[in-house]
Every structure is written in C-alpha cells, then in structure tokens.
Length: 88
Image 1: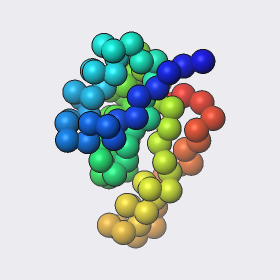
Image 2 (image 1 turned 180 degrees about the vertical axis):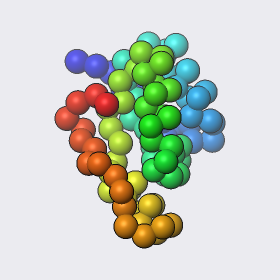
Image 3 (image 1 turned 135 degrees about the horizontal axis):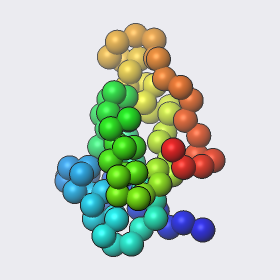
C-alpha cells in the first residue's frame, strides 16, 4: 500500500513546493489537483516528471477535468486516457 497526498490541500502554494513537502513528509504518492495546480493539460507532463524526480508516484489525474479545460479553451481534446489504476 502507498500513502498519497492530495495537492488541493495547498492550492495556494506552487506545485513544486507541494511536491517537495509531500516527499519530505514521507508520502509515497500524490494526487494532483488539476483545477488548482495544473490549470491546463499542457502542464501534465511536467507535473508528473516533477513528482517522479522526487520519487513520488502520481496516483490520480482526473482526465475528465483535463478534457473539459482543453475543450473550453481550444476545441477538441488531444489527450490520452488517464487511469487511476496505477502510477503514471
């Protein structure tokens, strides 16, 4: 079992700071709050890399929220499906 941290707890802080906190506090994974920390689908890859650089698994990225954000801004979504079934 892995224990994860949901980043929305610190939506007022930059994702880099939140990821650093989660890693230093001993969490194994993070659930990235899309609306609070990513805002656009283009930031997904960098956010996952940030977590992996600190040995954290990304346990959840709500695909529906990403698709809705992208659709509202630029038309049809161009995202691969995300799943909560494992680390990214």
